Image 1 (cartoon, rainbow, N blue to C red):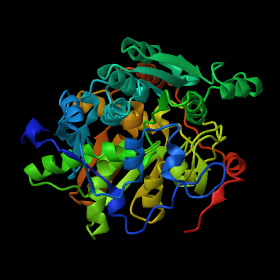
Image 2 (image 1 turned 90 degrees about the horizontal axis):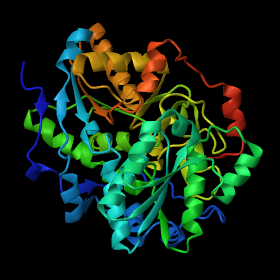
Image 3 (image 1 turned 120 degrees about the vertical axis):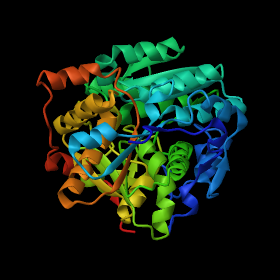
Image 4 (image 1 turned 90 degrees about the vertical axis):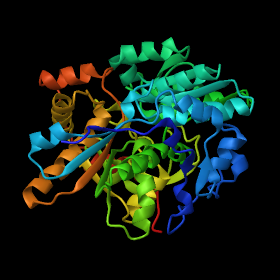
Length: 453
């Protein structure tokens, strides 16, 4: 048995982000203006993002250098370990090799800080001192609150109400770093008030929280900007440090994955690990890129491919995506970070054109895999990450049945230290599986502008 951990000296940490837009065989259909439905101009985003981030959002340059100040912050936790899960392999009696990139070691406990730090930095460089955002399970809100504290900025977080109520310690952590946190839907915005008037008992959804956060930024006259933790191109860009680092680490031990797996809500951790390997797939490399999502919110596997808003209030641009409809309210499953009606355009483009596969999983099996991983590897994974673990377990079992000795790489996107109530529900038998009814999907997507390109 060789070394368990494959680490890199700080000097070998990647110093540039990889932009997949430079290598797509076909261009991703452009975002549309929410009013005119015409292709979006960079200036249309000026009310919510600073120019430097808009430039990254629209960029087709292959490599974008990481600023020195961001590199200095990254060195607080990067490079993150790449580990081989020997004990998990043994428990599964599989000939497969299972590796995982451990993003849970960041100060926020997840991969989200990889984009929170540069977003705070670029806003500060543009003269912005206040950011507003949304968060589902709380990982993104935590990350942005930490990043804003690093650059002496104020942060307001609209947290999906069901997660706000389920995760009091996540709220406390966000407040520890000086951010204000508001359960969404709330009475602090016009959209929140209007939504509560119609749905006073709403558990909330990311689309609602996004609308509230965007409204605050738009009405500030430029004093406040909006920050998003997933979906957008510049977010996918910043997260590619995960995959670029993993490539260096695997190359150092002469390994290359046959299968790359990530859980998928908006798509950021999945993109972060898989996009640096996607360029090999574009060039003919035989590699499987796999997105795993909850059966209760099956965006990629059962959603409509077309143009939809990223928020419930129809304030954001229309993005090409797989969607369950921006009015869709997901059931209150225990993977709050995956409860989103849509997905990143770049991820949708990958799936639509066959460069990436998608699979929907039941949450009891997901937690079963998370428990197995914890007992084998000593890390309690976030419920979202458990989806990637189950994806890896299923692949390893297929190898056991076929005798193939594949190399599997998955992203452990965060730890579950603030999610123990979810584990308690699983251990006590209260956690149930849920298959979304087709009629609900058809109703929520009946007005979606489907896309055939």
